[in-house]
Image 1: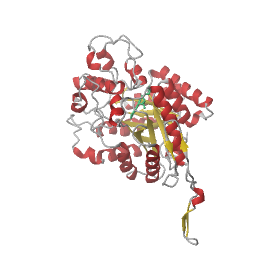
Image 2: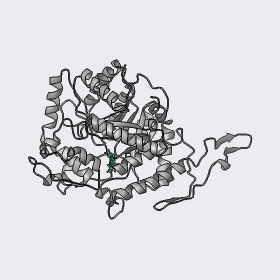
Image 3: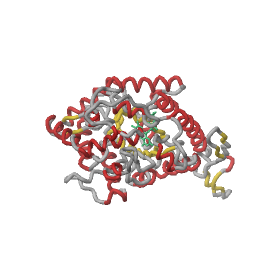
Image 4: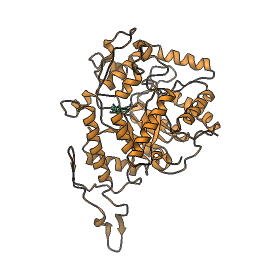
Length: 435
Ligand SMILES: Cc1cc2nc3c(=O)[nH]c(=O)nc-3n(C[C@H](O)[C@H](O)[C@H](O)COP(=O)(O)O)c2cc1C
């Protein structure tokens, strides 16, 4: 019997695979039918959650033009992630549904109201992926002249989360009395002003939404710099983590847990979820052939370089493909940059772009369902927890890929006793804390 792992799906929100002859989606991805079908498949496999990524721009970071982003559908086009979350929540009953929303997008009051509403709609299965946005263009789109530096973005996020959390608590859980004898719907003595005045944000409160089923929705965080990990350790219920191999995973998780302990939290209340991109086949050779075919195309390489350009604001079209990169730093996603460059390795740019199954994957998982399941179970045993976030390289999400996972990999993980076979609870937080 293996140590049990949690499972989530990190969904790069962009059109699903449309070029492959076996996976041609039509326009149904814009009416949520594709994503609802996918969410139901994940629910059948007892995933903890589906997490919907979001960004706020049509990127021109690659080559100084929007061509690559639009031609290859890199994080665009997409709909609003919270709107999709509402549709998915109403089509499922157990799966956690997490939407990304940037602190740059909404005043805290509006965000608190939105996430409380989604927690109600989902009967306590909603989570908010707290991001600060790491792209200059995103800042310009919401009216800022420049993206604030990382340190300040996280200072803003600390305060933003504080005010949102206070607004979410502005209704006591028994404020709605619906007392027919006194014709009282809400007991006004149980609904409180917040009167928050911070350095960056102000809000009077109370919220105009009753307390939501989870009290406060689950908080998720993605961002791997030391400052990002500190923020996560103080705030998050679950973390999207990218790390290099088992050693990197151990370091990441131990670091976050030590920071949580120092902040007075129980480290077990934070589930660190490592991104992986399994490629499965009937045999090891077939899986490797699939991976080889996937990564060795111009579209894949441009997709990888376009993605890393977008999230770092570094134009990777400017570097020769067959030479190593110079040392690089960013005000965007430093953790993703470190992962992509493999800590400043001397591999060529082409080698970095075609490594394994995409730069975000923490482990090279290529093989049969049984061999990949064993590898995952051994990794969680070595790291100590907590689980994996499955994802596809951008452009590669498809029914066929999801089916490989839910009908191949999950049964193999069940054979090892490494994943749940039914949901223990009704709310997302309770399921995350079930083991
Ligand atoms: C795996 C991963 C996923 C992320 N997903 C998003 C996202 O969906 N939307 C977004 O605006 N930022 C996203 N981010 C960016 C982070 O929220 C953060 O702003 C960024 O990583 C910079 O912080 P860091 O230097 O601490 O990593 C993601 C980062 C990582 C590493």
